[in-house]
Length: 181
Image 1 (spheres, helix red, strand yellow):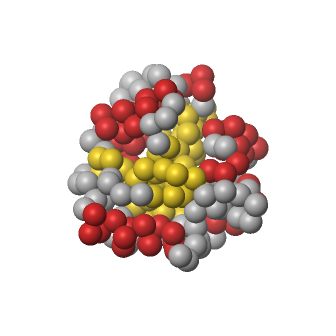
Image 2: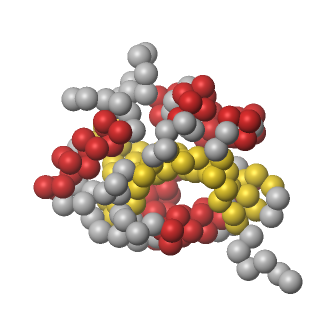
């Protein structure tokens, strides 16, 4: 019997499940200012609002996805597919699975469209019916010595209104980044 959906998202709950393969992918996929130090990621597994998924195609690890459940919405913090597995529709399947599991809006950050890669990333999420939100947004520094990063917020299924943007930004800053303006 052929498996119609070979992409699986498996929640990783213990530090022993966060293998070196995930660490390498995480550190290669995200610049230092856009990621936590690995021990911080491992510690977050103890936070019930944080979910770290391993992404598997058949039995092979092809990516990672970290998501925050923040009552009013889910926030995708990090999403990466291995270089050799990109362009095969796996990313679309992963995001569609996440959206199908969620009964609340989903929000994520993307880099400004200043590079071809950032433009492709934004186009990818737009194809999945995410909307670019208006208003200035900076990803707070992950720790001392790291810089804030100018980003855009994208939301699904509806665009965040400018009135709601302040509450959404505050919720992300406090819950995800432990950052208070």
